Amino acid sequence: MPMRHSSPAGPGPRAHTVVDSPLGPLTLVAEGVALAGLYMAGQRHRPPQESFGPRREGLLAPVAAWLEDYFAGRRPAFTAPLALAGTDFQRAVWRALLAIPYGATRTYAQLAADVGRPAAVRAVGAANGRNPVGIVVPCHRVVGSDGDLTGYGGGLESKRFLLELEGAPAVRRPVVRRRAGGRAAARG
Image 1 (cartoon, rainbow, N blue to C red):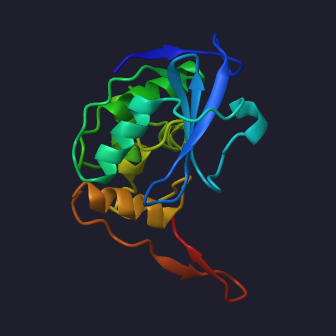
Image 2: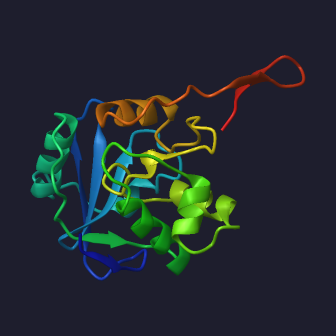
């Protein structure tokens, strides 16, 4: 899959479209002809709407068709160009995510080793969380060291849905622990 570096402003004009999915509306952001963003409604680290450029229906039609096939349970090959803006380290993590096969999972520690930085597990987690092209760059395939679902910008239920759609091995539910004061907090 072609991937190139771009600045946040990008080398080409930005525009966006919105497509329906089983997870709700997905915003696809184009930078020139490349996919620069794929965001769920309410996603953590979602950039401001005004940074997406004007809305254009039919934009990124091959990406929309890929998503339709993906959500139908098929394993389409993604061939559209990507424009991923980030640091060198972030882009290295995102390249490693692209190598995780459909239906497989990796731990954050394994991903850190994959990028040659085995001690940088937290930094890998942070880069994973800043992935601008979720689903296509499959950050949902990364789980905690004990198999628990951990952080996902689109929410843990969306992560579970995507992993189940792909037939990933059994994924454990997050462990709920009680904080001081009796409030429940999901671990991860």
